[in-house]
Image (cartoon, rainbow, N blue to C red; front, side, top):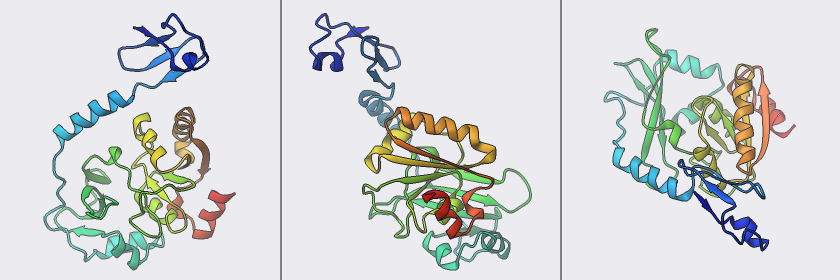
Length: 246
């Protein structure tokens, strides 16, 4: 379907009102001036939001999850210099039945709604991480004033895992990707918080990091790519600051 291009219209062009080609998935492109509308338009976003609301299921923590963390999990956290104060601040829990160190993810608003959780499996069997909730559809910035206020900030550092996000958030605003893949729709939502995104993944995920940075750049973000041998959680606060500010 063809329609008038808004950019061409601003310049007094496209009087025939057919420069913009609209496609079935919602994206559109003007082959006269290069103006592009991504598939995740406002209309498409509203449709997806309505669908998600219909599919919503309450997130439930393991029934036996308690704040008393098992020694094995404490030892694992200690190797990344995670303090007892941070364990309490981020409400980490232990499930004896499932042998899980649980990271609950709460909303940043005053209601502190449980949005999702991820668990590090210490049983020695099955997947290393378990989760419940739509981890890849939520944005919960972490900062030294956790939970971080949903306000504009100079930049946000996106990292792969939750412990790395905690380490980075000591001096910078951080968001966990819960992996190395995401969508343009998810990234576009960051414009509410910042216009600059730093992507920090380890060497093994360099290609994925470059892809994410490229997508973010196409979405009009200023982008910085940080590739290191290890994830941020392995480094000291001083090393993290040097990597981000260097």
